[in-house]
Length: 418
Image (tube, rainbow, N blue to C red; front, side, top):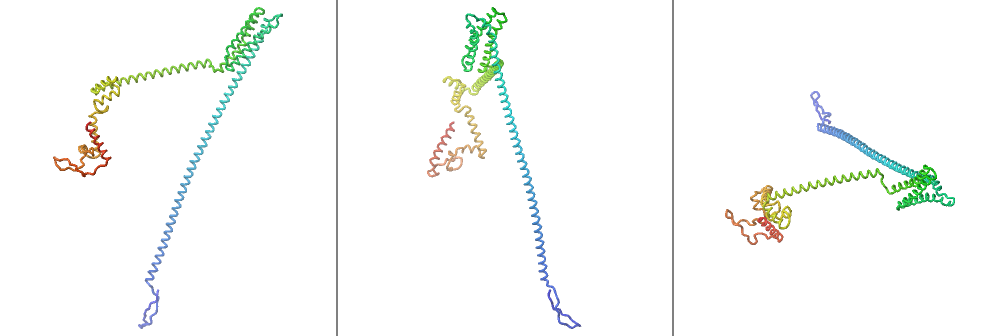
C-alpha cells in the first residue's frame, strides 16, 4: 500500500494534496500467488506425508503378513519335523521291541533247547545208571547158583568160573562200548557177550533144576540173560543215536514223503510227455499244412524244390532247399516276386510324390538325378533333339563324385534289368 496525491477542494478552492494510503494490485497478486503456492506446497507435503504414511502402513501390513506366513510355515515345518522325529522314534522303538522280542524268543528257544538237552542227558545218565544197577542185581542173583554148580571141596578154585562168565560178559560189553565210541566194528563184542550170558543161563537152568526148584532155575537163568541184555539194549540205543538212525515213525514219514515225491515226479514226467506229444503233433500238422500251401500256391517252385531235394538227399520242407528253389524260379528271395516288387516301387513313388507335391509322371522321369540331362535342350517342340555335350559346358566332377556317379548308374541299370 502506497500514498497517492489527492487533490481536494475546500469551499471550492483547491488545497494542497495530502498523501493517502492505497493498494498495489501486482503486489497483491504476487502475495496471493505466494500464499497459493505455499498452500499448494503444504497440501502437497500433506498428501505426500499421507501417501508415505499409507505406503508405510501397507508395507507394515505386508511385512506383518509375511511374518505371519513365515511363522505359519515355520510352525508347519516344525510340526512336520516333529512328526518325522516321532515317527522315527516310534520306528526305532518298534525295532527295539522287535529286536528285544527276537532276542527273548532266541533266548527262550536256546533255554528250551538247553533244557531239553539237559533232560535228555539226565534221562541218558539215569538210564545208564539203572541199566548198570540192573546188571549188578542180575549178577548177584545168578552168581550163587553158578557158584553152587561149580562147588567142589576138592577143587575150590572152580568157584571162580561163575565170576569169569559174568565178569567176562561185562568186560566184553565194555569193549563193545569202547568200539562204539571210537567208531570201530562192535558186533563181535556183543556176540561174545551174548554167548557168555547164554552159557551162564544154561548152567543156572540145569543146576537149578537138579539142586533146587523150577522157579530158582528159571529165575537165575533169566537173570544171567537179562543183565547183559538190558545193558546191550542201552548200548544199542547209544549206537543208533550216534549213527543218526531214524525211528520207525520217522522212517514211515520218510517213506511216505519219498512215495509222494515219486508220484509228483511221475505226474510231472507224464505232463511233459503229453505236452511234448501235443507240440510234436502240432508241428507235424503245421509242416504238412505248409507243404500243401506251398504246393498249391507255388507249383513250379514246388517241383524245383522236389528236384533239388532229390539231388541233395533232403526234403522239400528243408528251408535251404525251398529258398534255393524259390530263387531259381522267382529270381528273388522267398516272399518277393516281380509283381510285389513292381507294386512296392510304384507305391513308393506315389508316397514320394505326395510328400514332395510332384506328379508321379514327372517324378518317375527324374528319380535318378545322375541320369537326368545336364544341358539345355537344343530346340523345343515335338521333335526335340537331346543336347550335345561340348568340352567345357559343365564343370568337371571331382574324382570321388565321378566314382559315386558310376556306382549309382550301375545300380540303376541293375534295377532296370531286374
